Length: 377
Image (cartoon, rainbow, N blue to C red):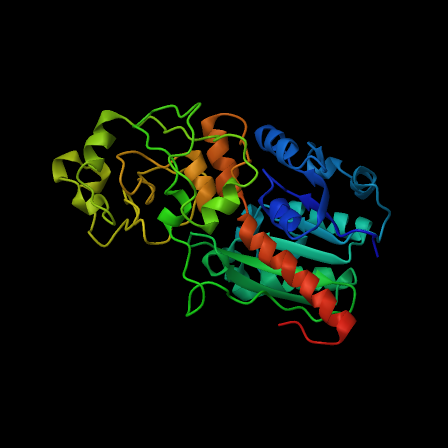
């Protein structure tokens, strides 16, 4: 076993999953992705890790172990979320042999070459319905083939772990240590701690006009709650808080939308042509104005008001990259690099750090339970 709890993150993006494991006490020693802007963000925020900016096909297990200063079998956990596009073409005949599943095959190659104690893989929930669940079973079978006989999967809800957002992702957790796998218990909602609301997350950020650059602005006030205080703790400045510039027609539309409202509140003559004939039961999130006391809809790679509920609760503008990052539970010291478009992509593609942290702490609890003989909760 490695002397310290170590992690390597494949398909790491800006490092949401890495950050969650770092918060739980892991030393994230290497990350890999093929997205230059995300790589710059990762290098700024994970200074202990070496970022390898090459296609996964060109990265060997030895490259990663060397970057981490480890030998095969010493890595505590291999993290990753192989992009899911290939899964949509799976069926029982093709299975993992489909050439379009190459990214997952590359992930398995790194698992085999590094022999981590634990494997944590995250993905979209859609893979559970493909081929009647065959993709999920194939993933488990492939990991068992590599010696990871204790394995399970579960769809986790980000809001259950303190993230102010409705977000669903499937997690696979596997180990070669003979430890039965369990998942973190829900800690928010359902009679527990109240869900973290949108305003809990962004209420201390300064007001902006549509298109206003927030460069040099400070916080609007002192932290209003523990969530804001925790995300601000290590920040030296307020980054990425600039409002995207929306056209005059969108500004006019937003003025008609109340809190919790949507495209249905926009006068017919102001609606986009393609929506004038839409049923009122369609497009429920389009041009949605956030409820400050509610949960955000899923943060996507484009916080485009035309596609989702991304209008600020009180201001006639789209949410900023910083507000999206707050709704993903990123600490404020994350200074997302690249163009504003690239920044939104980094935030939207990420695993919320608080969700990753809960998974990491559960792995530590499973290990403790094995040592003490007391079952993990």
